Amino acid sequence: MNTPHKHAELIHAWADGAEIEFLDCDESKWLRCSRPAWDPETEYRIKPQIEKRRYRVGLFVDSIGPRTITADSHQVHGVIERDPSFHSWLTDWVEYEIEVAP
Image (tube, rainbow, N blue to C red; front, side, top):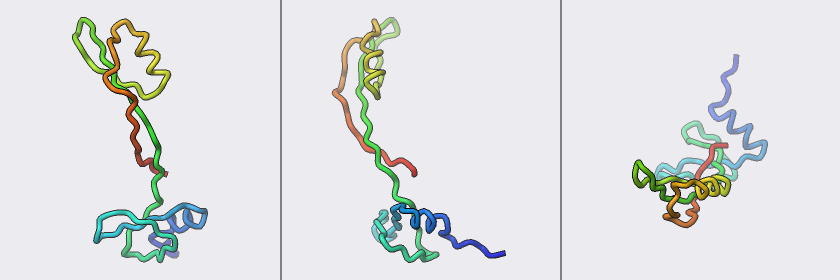
């Protein structure tokens, strides 16, 4: 029985259109690789997708005392504002990016 190539799954993904990156050990970062050599000594990966997300921090004050709560959608935002313990928003919407595995 033949042993599959070390990067067989990535090769198939690349053939199907996935963007491939390789680890540049000198700079310790991932770089785009438009024509991978599929060297067994090189580490490759599918480029992670980047998602933009956001949140907002609010202040609750009740019998427990002050505490914070985070809203990550307009729906949650509205629920928080209608709560009798809601006091105020401590931040505006904060946007950030996060890598999501393919």
